[in-house]
Length: 495
Image 1: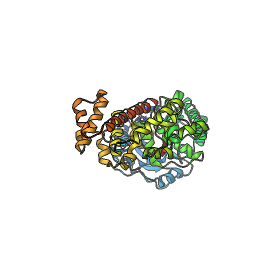
Image 2 (image 1 turned 120 degrees about the horizontal axis):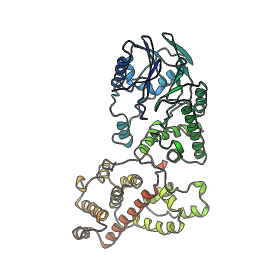
Image 3 (image 1 turned 90 degrees about the horizontal axis):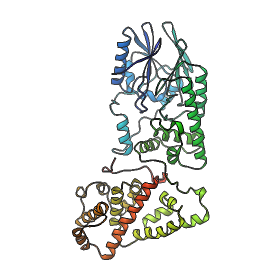
Image 4 (image 1 turned 180 degrees about the vertical axis):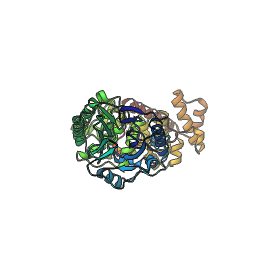
């Protein structure tokens, strides 16, 4: 049941702003038998529920007008439920709607696909989005009986076009997504600096009541707090941009202070990517920003507890230590091309680093076949829930001859995969080491029929070395590097 709240003589609101992309607040302005809807819901069914609530509260009111505040809400198929209403869309919003690239296609069962499914759960997305016909310029006034309703486009700010609805008779301001107190906004376009300035303009209107696009009804104090949030976002993001921190790290590194408990911190991935472009950085593809947002939402991106050495922090001695990653193997070839964060973190302890690297190099350049080695490493990553380790070894495992199906099977019980008897025995031994810190007599006896003593020594040492690395990765919260691509998890990964 959709609830309506009266906030003024001529205004009711439906607050559905829990921060999810599919949701947002709607408002109904009325006088006599005339009504105006500000933003439909995500789909026809939810909009019909809203209209049913309006008919119940205002049985004599006809919704003859519809306002679309920004381009993001045009995708809401709920507009079809008010198809007979006169639509009011600014030229800026209309232009952004026309340029809309459409929805991003997510790889099935990827982090992004799973996140979008959860975010959009319960909504029917089959209805087409809204298509404007005769947009107004920067401002216009709609008369509902004797009540003037002023529509003012203040963009580019949160978006290229941002329309607010001002009711001078009620001293009520309906902002759309220009304001979303309590929820971190997702900014795809517009100008963040202009957005910050627009907040001062909104406050100067001195509204008694402010209806944001998401979150609770507020006042001028809410506008000013949101302006301070944007200023903080600008300053802290710029600081990290100037230091050369990638978007992936900045999105989880920003100190949010009193705004830390706001909903949807994953939206910062989108806004930070947009800010980097505003600062002169390279554009982040839309799919990449959404994928990063999904990784944050799913808990796969968090700030590191120990920060890896940045290039500006390294002296020649540190660079010389990092050059220890020499050796003839695909793993160390990758390390020479791009130094991974696990090494850039470990090198903060120079003595331990210098003792550790030769052992790590030894177990990956030893006598075990490369295919067996990668089975050991990937199974260990799955057993230890070490996503960083899993992702770094996906291309190496593929190069060692493991198929995509076999790699995925390493995230399931041993009997689920089509393994050779020797490989099934190997995986069983790995699981026993993980669960019991030893290998039972029968498994060891069978292993010894397939592996030489030297290979058995290396096998157990390899398993232990990568278990130790998993501990380091998880406890230090080592973050995956931008050059390593998006985080990819198998179907059997614990969620």
